[in-house]
Length: 145
Image (cartoon, rainbow, N blue to C red; front, side):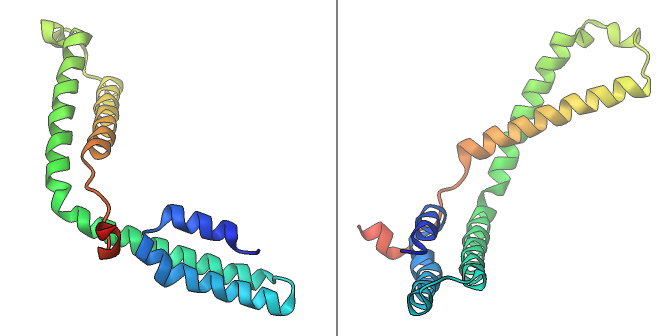
C-alpha cells in the first residue's frame, strides 16, 4: 500500500501524538486519493512530505522550548569540561614550564591556540549535550501505557 514507508519514517521521527494528529491524516488522504485514481501523482507525495516536515518542525520546536530550562546547566558543564581539557593541553604542550616567554606570539601561534580551544569547546559541548540532554516531551497517553 502506498505511504506505508512514510508512516514508518514518521513513527520513528515524531512523537506519538504528533504522528496521530498531523501525519497520519495526510497519509490516509494520500492512500485514499491513490486508491481512487489507482496511481499516485508527484503532488500527492509532496503533500505528505510537507505534512512530515511540518510535524517534524512542531516536535523540534517543542523540544527546544523544553530545553530552555536546561541550557544553563549544559553551558556550565561545557565550560567546566572545556577549561579542564584546555588546561591539560597547556600542560602537555610545555607552555606551563615557562617556555611561553621564549615563544614568539605571532599570528600563527595565536590562531593555532584558538583553534585548539575551539575544537575542545565543540567536543565538550557535544559530550555535555549527549549526556545531559533532557528527555523528549511525552503526551498523557504515552505515560499512562
